[in-house]
Amino acid sequence: MNGQLSTQQGQLDAETIPLRLGTRRSALAMAQSGMVAREVTRVTGRPVELVEITTYGDTSREHLAQIGGTGVFVSALRDALLEGRIDFAVHSLKDLPTADPEGLRLAAVPEREDVRDALVSREHLDLETLVEKCVGRPARIGTGSPRRMAQLNAWARARGAVIETVPIRGNVDTRIGFTQSGELDAVVLATAGLNRLGRAAEIGEHLAPELMLPAPGQGALAIECRADDPELAAALGLLDHAPTRAAVVAERALLAALEAGCSAPVAALATVSGENELRLEGVVGTVDGATLLTMSTTGPLVLDETAEQAARALGHALAARLLDGGAAGLMGERV
Image (cartoon, rainbow, N blue to C red; front, side, top):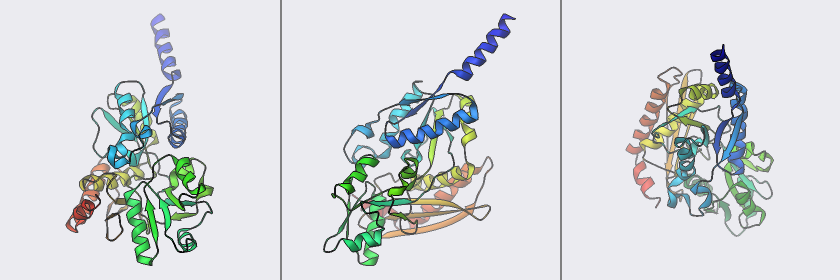
């Protein structure tokens, strides 16, 4: 009888002890992690507490390319996971390095938010109007992304417009603050982040993928846990959205095959086409926009146990075509 009571007490404790979710301290990271925490509680019945972790990428003011790329936002969270200080972590998926980490597993990729980039300016202008209003001088547009710079400059070249892309860093408030102070005419940010922060009203224009193809994994979140915790992985897996996972696996496979990181102007977007087809588009270019190499391919949308294998094959196939078309040389010109 006592043994039965002990077992029941143990089960009760397991259900009431909060799961520890590791998150960066930024407002956007906290908003994203809060969303995931509520969903984890909904599907598991377990309370979730947020554990704030400062990463090197949050404290350094150097440009990302100089300090190791977007992976600097991830390493501290992964260390906390492996050391047992947290139970799982939430990342912006586009920040994850493409190499699989030892001892960890990607437990879930929830359904993706809006993939588009957004133009934010003090007067809520679209790109065309913004450029027209900057009479006699270039429109100064801030972004920390070579991918965005390449596509903005290509757009300007095609229209004979005069713009200046300005490298910036900082959180959303800092970046939008550059436009409020007049230091910049506009900044480009991810629509998904602005939506999650409740700041969609500040968007002057959603930049269509035809103008600005997003970063691989943009708009998606990654929920990561230890590989030796299959029970938690299975619970978190209830939040997985199979079509989103297939799409981002294809995009990241392309990025990995190109051996490109955040300092390379590479864009990729996989979308479901029809009922059972995945269309993958990729862009590689030079930061000055003088050359953009754009290609696409399609393959089957596989949602069974071979889904990731099929998605990776699609990404690798398009990367091979881009490399045959001269992508390596274009990426080499970014330095």
